[in-house]
Image (cartoon, rainbow, N blue to C red):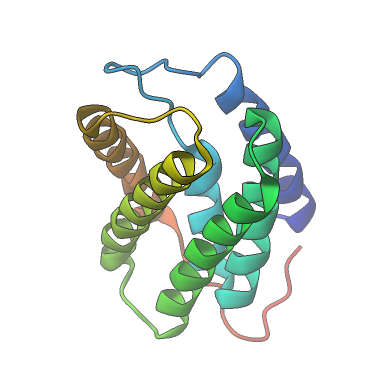
Length: 155
């Protein structure tokens, strides 16, 4: 996938996630498609690509939600960096969904903690668990992610 297409997919998915996909899944859950794309960028491009994609994704999601951009950008950036660092270690593709699920749990818990800290809308524990479960299912899409070899040029 070209870098331009990926860069354009982030705002498109962020708008879709914040508008017509808002609370669209059973249990009132919104799929974190931007987060999944950010994890795929990290797993495909490495730690630098993952952190850059995470900063961009977190800023977009926060701006569309009306949240503070810096904390979410840092959370998403850290998750993207961790995904990329895992891929740079030469890990098997089979582990990508598991790493994705772990990072989705990390993002969900830390976003909820930030919302509690800033006095925003609080999620119940059951809604948080359902959100993690649904986004964990979406992490299975990460099985199709392949690491770009070192020195390879993007189209």
